Length: 377
Image (tube, rainbow, N blue to C red; front, side):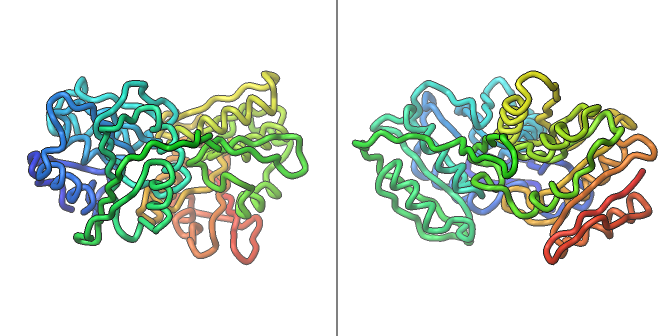
């Protein structure tokens, strides 16, 4: 694995979190390099520039531009932990960076905005709307990404909220998008969070922009809801990778003895889950919410039941590494004799890893697209 980023701003050791043996992926991509080279060539940043960086995956941009005291906004807690880790590895002062979650924006105007285009275009739209009050006629906004992850809709959204866009030539399958800011006559209203009523309930479900399946209940979760345990003796139940928290919400409704723990590394997911739980139970039930990397914050042998619908991508990288980590963490955290329930697309073959980690694995429901497995510690 290549760990040395060599750019005009310097040479930096960068790694991805979570750290894994035999990692084959770099902590940056060609779009990061393209953008950093352009910034150096254009003398875009001055000593007193107010710099805002959005969606910096593992800190490549923020680390390389550390001397400009950037404000870094991300919806990913793990992304911010990666940036902090790489700051420390390169002996950089964390006092020269300000971290903010996706729902906590600065109020001071900015001179330069660097955007790594996120996987979810709704998140980009939300960010462009939140960016509006910070822009001045002299602000420079540049977006960067790999060509395959930047459909024409990216340009259209940027033109809608910012002004005329101009794409660069592609280099090593990466591209920059430059924007000419235009004063917009219309006043934009942020459509997020999006709300819908959960079928056959009175629950109004809030979904911030970066929450999976934010406009309706996805078919996988719908299938899982039909097979959730009811009236169990489980006292501590984890909704692992909770998203908007619907799974944990219904587990709380149907298991009166249970105390729910909602876990996600997305700021917007945790905010959505918290709002949905509090709205549903109006302080009659209590739950805990964890913005963290999986079950790292939990003690061993502490939970009675874990329900998990694992994501199969980290940012734009597809794979089963996140699911595998969740399964391993679950085995550590479950009490002896207690259970993990997992749903996944049939082709993902989660049962192979589950059998290896837990020694046995049972199918409790399946259809043409999804399988629900149950394993016991």
